[in-house]
Length: 174
Image (cartoon, rainbow, N blue to C red; front, side, top):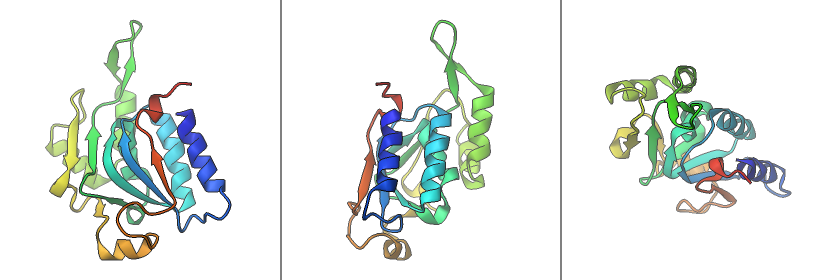
């Protein structure tokens, strides 16, 4: 997670990169601790950057849906959000559902996401996935013409500057 924070800070402070031209691409994020995602996505929201979901955004990564303005986030056809109840390790290191953490997630998700989660069994230990046509009305498609006009001029989803959030960054404990 320390790496993720450094990437975010470096990109925000990089010379010659204005927040209006920057885009963050989330491709393979498996999640991590809720608090760290709250901090990073709050900073990202303040930067005004666009966020492109282009692969897995699982667990705490899904907080992006409630913390980033709807007009600053889009999903490619490869986007997949994975939701489950929050958990903490017990004294033996086994995962135990955290009612308080789960409620925190629930409170941050927009109403459309809460409705989808409720229709698919709620937040439990089992991961449920939101992807494809189910994203319609929840997250804008990155190929929508009005959104493309706001993104930097390069086509396809490799807009520059792009910062990828690497897989396992949230669990990287260096």
